[in-house]
Length: 181
Image (tube, rainbow, N blue to C red; front, side, top):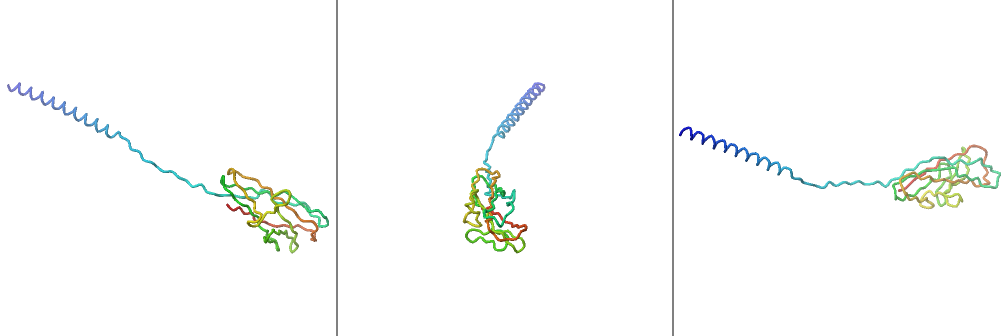
């Protein structure tokens, strides 16, 4: 009987071991299945687009030779500035009076080129008909609305009125161009 009890105990132990192993495998598989779940969350993304503009001069206003004995104004359209702004933004462009003595922005700007103490009056215009002066402030400003963020070329027209009593020489001025946005 000893041999029989022994065989029976071995069979039960083997069956118990096999059952325990199967249970461990099932629990391990169930644990893996539970760990395969998913969770989601939202991540907010944001940016602020700057309302900005850039401006640069691409060519100076260069008048032809001025003849003080002529009765005809000297005109040119050789000046050019470029502006680029954020798409859809509206800006205004002003031009200062210049650096020469006696230049002013009161009312219609009076601009002057200088050769030492000698002054030659001129003005800058937004159109080739010379009817809209580039203003120094909110009067006669150039209004610009950007259709895209590319460069826009703007021609600067100039006139030196006829009949100014000035000596021969080289006259110059510098005008500050400002874009407000």
